Amino acid sequence: MRLIVEDDPDVRGLAAVLLEETPLDVVEVESAEAALDCLQERGGEVAMMFADVRLPGEMDGVQLAKAACKLWPTIRIMLTSGDPAAASIDLPECITFTPKPWRGLDVLVQAEKAIHNPQPPVT
Picture 1 (tube, rainbow, N blue to C red):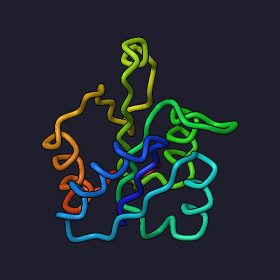
Picture 2: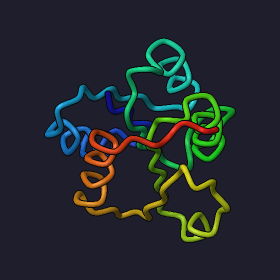
Picture 3: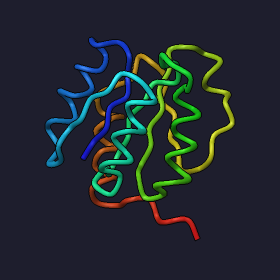
Picture 4: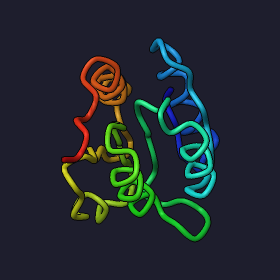
């Protein structure tokens, strides 16, 4: 399963259309809290999470990604943001950052890696 976490419905829809070309289901949510709910219910099914850095609610995308890395270490995580300062955020190795506007190819490459080469579990 692919989990898209994006508050902008147009961007979320574009990512969903791209990821629907892959063999796994796509689930779309608009907040980190909704993403955590989904992960708690279906975390073992999630191969990739694609999330924006800025999200509505108490938790931003960076906090979500770090929590997901820790709790579900085999999920491939891709963060994105249109804020140039976001590119300098210190992220763990388990998180890939791609600036907005992102290219569809970048998203699909990460999706393919998630299918064929998932992140190794933390030891």
